[in-house]
Length: 404
Picture 1 (tube, rainbow, N blue to C red):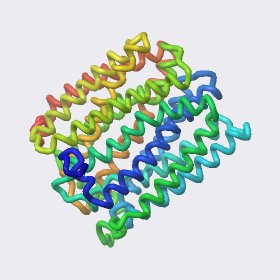
Picture 2: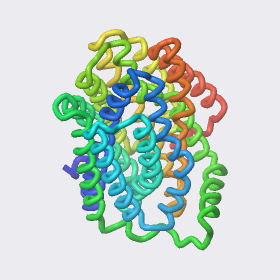
Picture 3: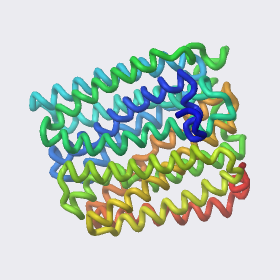
């Protein structure tokens, strides 16, 4: 398989183990997204605002801790950081499953679990993303990052549908128990790596000094700054549809958990398709312009999807939204690693994670708007704002469109 250009990076043993670990971890995460969202609706009377609050609890720690996670990724063993975070997720999810099965689960439990999950994500993802450069040569990074992202999107295909089906038979608690086992398997897979044991740099500065250095490095580089701004805009206005999708599906389509899972599967199938397309475009030289055009199309796709009124039309629209959105995100992450130095890569990737932590700044307001004017209208506005801001940024920063 590795002889195929699109699967080139799989010839590296450690990269294969990394992909296996990513698949298990992301499978647990995507199954948990459905089961947690379904549990929130059950505990909070189908409230879209409650869904956005749980997402806020998950995302806020990423805002405050991702820079620390990036500094740790450059100072300590990236492999060991990932293993510890995966074990922490396994223990946390097992506790959540036990509370749910015993009938003791409360809405505030989900908020607390979200805070801890988000904290572990802030430490885990900078190491998981930057460790790719420890395994795969520089000229293969685009392919490797796209394939790594494809593992996420494969789980977005299989995870939601499987979770939606399993909820019917083993309830949300059973899905949580399964997720706990998957997180543990992800930790064991990372433990098989031979690389990533040594830190990327031997910094003599304090932790705060490392964070300031990384932040200053990214802000002074015009290409990195442009990429981070685009990530910021897409996170605020491109992603609110994800936490609000369960509420939209119940409100507009009146679906059950299994049908909601299928909607998420189509989004994941589109994302997988997008990353595989990117993995085959290693020689493409106008990636900056492609990034801006993709973000613009993403906003258009969200606007069209939000106005869908039938299940059969929604499925292909979510495929398109997932394809465009994941293509944009994977290309952004690729360019951030390509244009940052090895010793700064963990901290640069942590800044990209920080933008994800800002998602509550839009998820919560759009959730509140949905309470008053409907989830469909709220999502339409998010897509429209993304379109306008992308056009403004493209006219303001001409350098990003020239990035190769």
